[in-house]
Image (cartoon, rainbow, N blue to C red; front, side, top):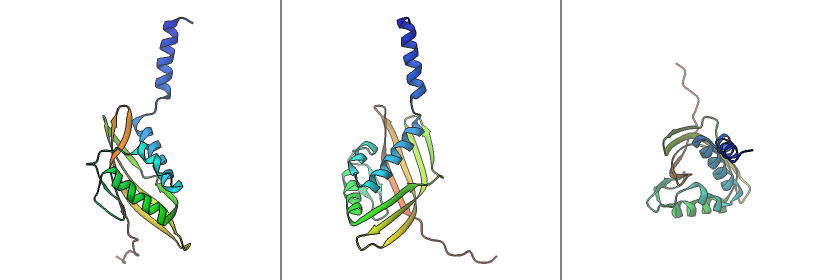
Length: 155
């Protein structure tokens, strides 16, 4: 094979296997939720930016200024509870505009206390992402609990 053909093949092979920005964000979202369940919060360093001015809102607290503060809150949450399930639901939407993206979804989480009591929490989330140096990272995360709805009144 000629060197020029080999070079062309390698370039096209790279394009065939490259993930789209949406696929990259979905993969990082899965890494994030798995990290919370496994209590391996070191993974979060690959998912979130480290800018000390970034603002986050967690279900228990906010605003949290800076990734270090967010990580401390999640460390406490995963220490005080066993989070046995944390998933973004199938309604997840990701809109990419150049090097920025907005992600919205509902989520479900199962927490088990040290006494063995379990509770299921449902909520919604908005995450803002940006691509820098070929990596997508979240720079804003806003999660809130969706309160249970009672039966609809008759009409």
